[in-house]
Image 1 (cartoon, helix red, strand yellow):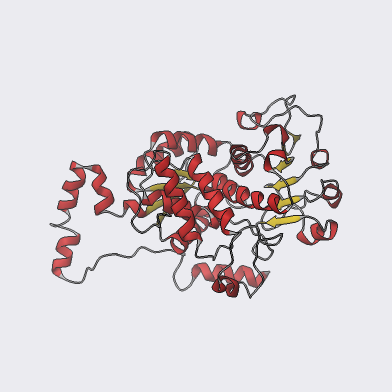
Image 2 (tube, one colour):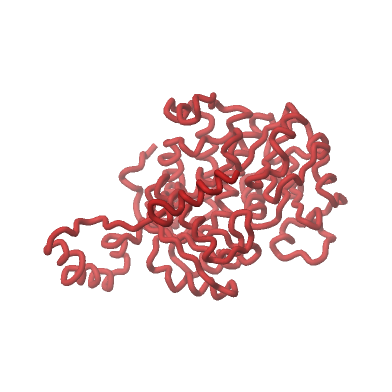
Length: 414
């Protein structure tokens, strides 16, 4: 472990500090180049944008530029580290945007003592960008921040910890239930963790057909039920009439467990109490709610997903957010709405049903990758994600009326 720590520090420090850089996209080698890049030539696009703000998408990098913004209040599993300490994570997100979807990123770390101060800061800098990716912001402020920014801005605002996680959970769960011979609308689902990821995931599952009466959400105080006092309005949305009070009671007879909480909170006894053919998404990272070895030894009829890359069925947000933004940017969407998120769910889900290209199999050590209990989601290195998901998202943006540009010429029409 000490070797890994030092390797990680060296990776970030050498040969140059950090993981991202800014490079010019136009030649700047001659006096004439300089006259076009800056004065006097730069005055022409300034005038054009002043006359028509939409011209910024033609003459600047705005249309392919996303802000990855945090206040540092919920960084990875480390908690409230402060904004500056979150910068390596924001740079890392920039690497993923560029590597998987060709999207440029400025990472922005904001010192803001209140949610409203953060909101005003983002509003003030928003004209620079084609989209806003909110990152590592603690609940419940993250809900207020996203809601207000989405209402105020005419570019997509997307909190990946909420919606990116929800999209991947939904895609994987639909496939896992299909394999287990179960229906989403009949499944009893327990979600451990009532923060941003858990609430967004349960909202999305309801949108695609889950029965609200069959959803139980569990936080540190136990089951969120209708008789509980002190619930904020986001948890209140999931308060149901039930006499179950503990995680163990909630899981008795359940079909699905979704963990977005912390390590080792699900016991073997809890897993044994679940219904036949259970689906377990133990997504706490790096240490899941139940160790995969213990889960596999306890039930031989389960489908298990984690957030880790060293086990099958990794539920990784990189399957979603770069491609969702790619589709949104390509049609200049004013928002990333529910229709676009649902389109991403089904595009990702369907891809797992199809034969895997040889180059993807080779990248994973020739491990067998075929739709089944050990392969319910495509891998992050599957190049088809970069075509299928953006196209599905763009199509949904156009159909739902939030696109400002026509169907991209480089997208397939079928």
